[in-house]
Amino acid sequence: MAKRKKFGEVLIEEGVIDEATLELALKTQGNSGKRLGQVLEELQVISERDVAVVLARQFGLKTVKNISQHNFPQSVLSLIDSEKALQKLIFPLRIEDKTMYLAMVNPLDMETLNTLSFGTGLRIVPYLTTPQEIHSAINTHYLKAIDSPAPGDWWRVMVFDNQELALTAAFSALNKEGYEVIKASQGEGALTLVHQKHPHLIIAEISMPGMNGVDLFNTLRKSPATKQIPVIAYSNKATAHDEAKLLDLGFIDFIAKPVNGVRLVARTKRALRLVYGDLSEPPKLDS
Image (tube, rainbow, N blue to C red; front, side):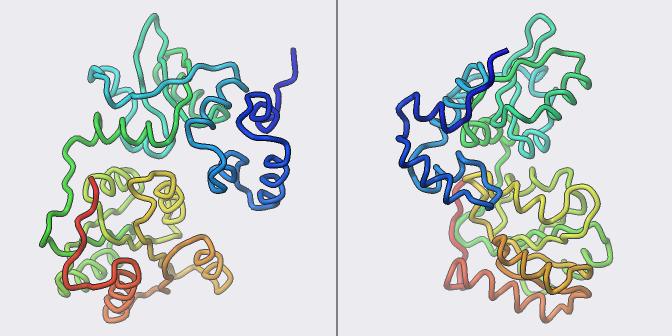
């Protein structure tokens, strides 16, 4: 079996970049933990579409685009729930001869492919596409009842916490101040709520079983529709070192539990002011 060519080699062969650009990207990548494609995107050297095409060439797969413009029967959509689609960046295209044709971003995500195959009893054939394509398709075909804020609506804050006492206390403090508060007590459903409700700010517990606040934050950063939403991390288990890492990761703030209502409201106002400026009226968010 021929050895699979490296991503950078295929980029050069396809004429997308030259060797000097690849060398610069590899140096920039260093020990950042980022994918080479992500680094090149951040350097504005290649696009998401370039990444999908090159990965398809590298893995011998086909690509797909304009997914949101097509119609899909409910029998196909029901095989994958919206939360899983958002988290794994996948979308079911069609079922044919006991085979599911699946749009996806990461061809190395064998765990998802194997889990889907086992759960549905179908053979999975992946088609590569971009994160933007997946999110557009999910918004169109899964999340049709978008509830975007209208001009004059008050600020929406989501609190993501599996501890009912803390969730209730945060809701009470923020609601009393006049905020519209969205409660999410578990990972399942939280991503869907974010895409449906478009909160201006999210306050997320980082020490939850299953999907926690960090997982939610990282998943939101993959979507153009949600990557700009500021997120405050809070927990009673984080050390000073953990707090520093969270801020470096991109969280706008950190609050230690137990949370005092006055402090929570003050930090919420601070975060909203830093991101949106004037707090007299919230901006209209894109749906």
